[in-house]
Image (cartoon, rainbow, N blue to C red):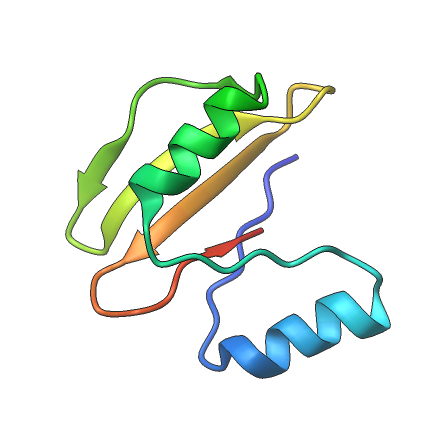
Length: 81
């Protein structure tokens, strides 16, 4: 199962998913630094970083093989989901 959230209001989404659902929400505006951090933690990547008109993307896998997309949107904050 793949889940992607497009957010208009990062702060309220972080509050909802963090406080109400107990998720850890990570915000970072530097995808390259995030990739480096995840590589150091031995996170499994699916492919290489790629770009689209929306911004820069990388796909990682959780232990069950589910994909998680991390996006650094052009001109916006990045959120992992």
